[in-house]
Structure formats: structure tokens, C-alpha cells
Length: 303
Image (cartoon, rainbow, N blue to C red; front, side, top):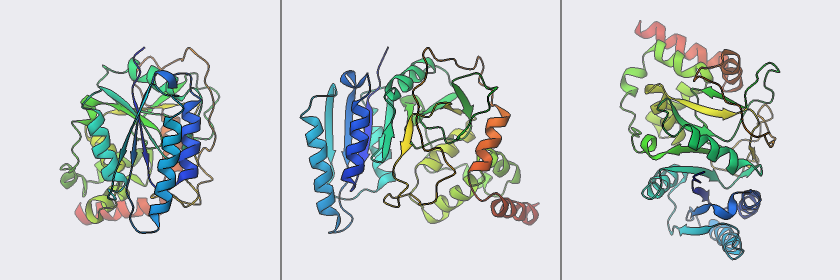
């Protein structure tokens, strides 16, 4: 089986970074995996000490020879998360056809690499599937759902993977937004997996909310492509403690556990959206009442 490299993005959280690296190192495929670590530079003087500690954690991991290789890219300046991810992933794609991406506050299960690589290999030539999620935000899947994964039009940035062919064709300027912004039909479709999506895209385009992920998700939406989610989540997000760039302290509604799957995995025979699971995602994300009212007002204004 072909193994994709892992890209880890870090900033100023040494304890989080240490937990992320420890969990990743516990994976069966770690010794055959190439790891790229991007260490962003300081925003202020207060960041210098923490970033120094992060880089010490990285160097300590490097000396243990756990991974096939570790390449560390240290930035003197602060690029920010969005710019770091877009440029870093693009850089690694100069050498590889697929990548797995983590941030410094994600603790993975010990079969994370196994699961992600199986999915990357299985759907490599499937143009309908554009990304793989390692995280399942749903706390409970209906008992009658028999597969180990499901499809969604919602992308995920909490432990994910994609292929060069998809990433290199993303329209980061989101030119389709001009016809999307006043289209009630398109906005409703985009919000089918979360009432937050159209609102997040509005903020990104109009105020530059520093989010790469909503642009990536919008691009896949325009192309009618899906993300594959695991039934057994492979990620615990430990950054919901207020320490991250896009973190919050009120995330109790999301799944906060991970689980090792039983192999071989059972995948759906066709790329079909499971209505019950899509409905569960839609209810989970965003303030449904306020955001639906906003889109209704848009409909009244323009139609």
C-alpha cells in the first residue's frame, strides 16, 4: 500500500504539539511515513518563548527516529494558519500525489494512518471524492448504518487528506461566489450539511476571516464533489480550550473521542449521501434559526 506523507502545522502550543506527535508516533505505519512539520513564526514578542519550546519538542521527536523521515520548515515571520496551510500543502505536493494533514492540537487514534491511507488508495482515481476526513463530528451513528464510512458535501479541517489533482485545481479566489451570494437555491444547498457554511463563506469573502477551509469546501461544492467521513472518528480535538486560532470553549456537542476500527473496512458500494447522516450534520453546525432567517431575507430581497 502506498503511504502518503503527513504534514503537521504548529505554532505556539508546545504541550499540544507534544501530544499530537506522541499519538502520531504510536501508529503502526509511522516508521514508514515521511513527516513534514511547519513551524510558524511569532506574531508578537510573547510568542518567541512558546515557539522555541515547540521547536525543542519537534527536535526531540526527530532524534528518536520514529518516522521514516522528518523535515522541519521553520518560519521567521508569522504567516498565519491559512497561508501556512495553503503554501505548505502546495509545497509538499511538488513531490507527492496525496497528503495527510494535521494541526498541533489533534490527537489521533493508533490506526489513523492505516485508515487514511486505505481511503486515499481506494478513492485515488474517483473524481467524485475530493477529500478524506479523519474526524467524525457526530457523537452517535444510527445503529442500522452498516458501513465504516459515509459521504458528505461538507469538508473537514480536523485531520484530513486530499490528492494533488484536487488541491492544485482549487479556486482560492472563489470566483463562483458572485453568482452564489444572492442565490437562495445555492445557499440552501451549501447549508445542507450545516447552517454555518454560507455565513462563514460570506465572512471570508467580505472580511477575510483567515479561513482556507471554507474556500476549499466551497470549491468542492461548486464541483459537486464529496468528502469521506469515518464512522469511528480517528481524532480527538484538544484545542477547544481557547488556545487556538479558530477554537472555542463551548464544543460539548461535538464528538470528543476516537476509536480503532475493525479491519477490513466496509465501504458503501456507491457514492450516495445518506440523508439521516446529512441531517445530523446540518443540525450540529451553526445557529440554524438565525442563519436560516438571514438566507430567507436574501431570498426576499433579490427574488
